[in-house]
Amino acid sequence: MSQAMSEEQSVQRLIQKAYENLKTSDAARAIGALEEALGIDFENQEVVYALNCIHWWLEQIKGAEDPSRSQQSDTYARGEFILSQWEAFYGFLERIGSGDTAAFDPCLYAVKRFVYSTALQSFEDILGDGINQHDPALLLLVGRCYKGVGNYEEALKYLEQAVRFKREDGEALSQLADVNALMEETRSAKALFREAFYMDAQKVDIRSMESEMILRLRDRVEAEGHKGRELLEWIPIYGCLFGIFSVKRELKQVEVGRLKQSIFTLENAVRGKPEDLNLLTPRLINRYFWLIDHYENVQEDPALIEETLLKIKIVDPTVYERYMG
Figure 1 (tube, rainbow, N blue to C red):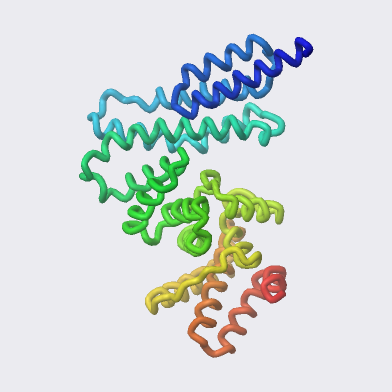
Figure 2 (figure 1 turned 60 degrees about the horizontal axis):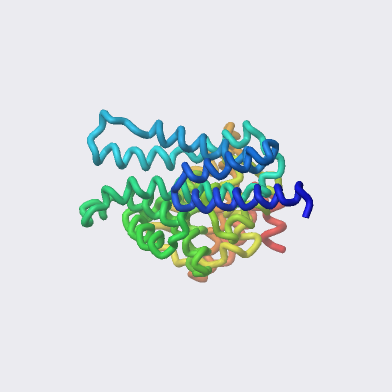
């Protein structure tokens, strides 16, 4: 075996050791293993990338400490602050650049485990004997953390409790949907994802999703040319067109009234051609889809379905053709 090959194997072993340490929340040992690897190959991109990620998060965690707060509020705020830093972290990764980011997926997975585990420790300290079990915000955060560390059973328990309090919250519903998908409860996942994007697509944290179902759909929608906030509004459209959001429920009469009022409001907004037309248009189409589903479910007059289809055709002929095809 050549010296170069031997050194490469040593570096890879140290990288794997670092990731395993990181998954168990031992950042110090992870850094030690990576620095040892850097001593062997100081140009190794994965080692440099991993060190940058860990040091960035350690700075955020250090910044989450505030000795001026009470112990409980400090603990809660610390965990909440850590989780709030994901968007900034992705921005950091974009700034440092990294070439083929897919090659660093094992690093990001280990980092994710470390971050969610660290945040979870904060929340577990205040869960206590159940006194905070009726705090929907806390339940949602704890559920997200358990999902992030791979404990889907516990995640499901907390997220189901959160949704009982936040039945119309896009974030809570999407997190519960994601866990259901990860546990291969496909039917429930499809119904919950459809509901989440209907309630409030902008509250769905697509970057925190892990299930193949939603990530594949996201990739397909991105391939259609939709990015950023616009992407979130188009996901339910293509979820319907591709047959992914295929599990539907019967609407209550009060929900039908709200749906029609929402459509009326959006139609007026779209006619005014506002700056956020790129968000309002798919949002309106999604509500048309829901209305058609309702008409079909209650066997309403086919003329009402045709009228709604015509509205879709006027708003976006391409979506209409795909829907009818």
